[in-house]
Image 1 (cartoon, rainbow, N blue to C red):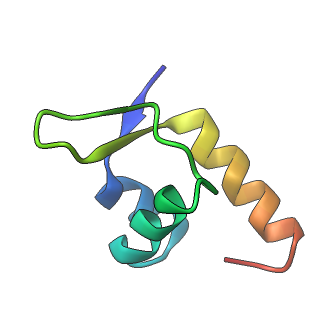
Image 2 (cartoon, rainbow, N blue to C red):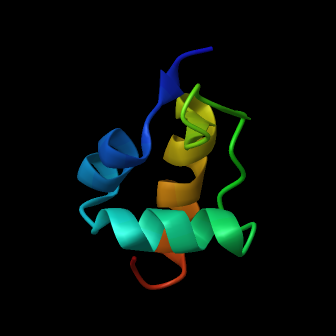
Length: 60
């Protein structure tokens, strides 16, 4: 299981980091764990599934 930072997820999804943080806060993209600084880390497979779903629903 590869973990992605907020910045990596934002780059992968093509959105700003604040959008990723909002998705996590609203439990639309659930973090797998937190790093030492308390920032969320996301499972790469979950991010890919979210991107696929968001594209099917009309985009990010």
